[in-house]
Length: 73
Figure 1 (tube, rainbow, N blue to C red):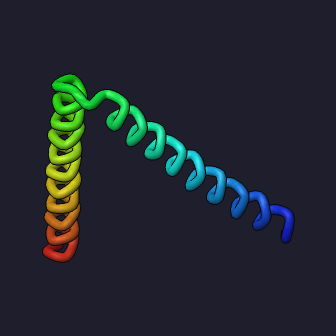
Figure 2: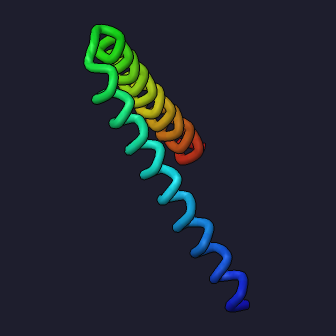
């Protein structure tokens, strides 16, 4: 049983490291391209993030509505 737990911990650590590496690379790219292109890219990323947040909120509201229906029955 212990081996299984060790594997899970290793996967989580690797995943976090991968995420950090990607973010660092992205920051370097933006500093390297200090021009209109870099600005446009940053604005696009911000817009995408906002859309994702809105979608998540909508999904949460739908789940709450489904729970209410179950209680009504």
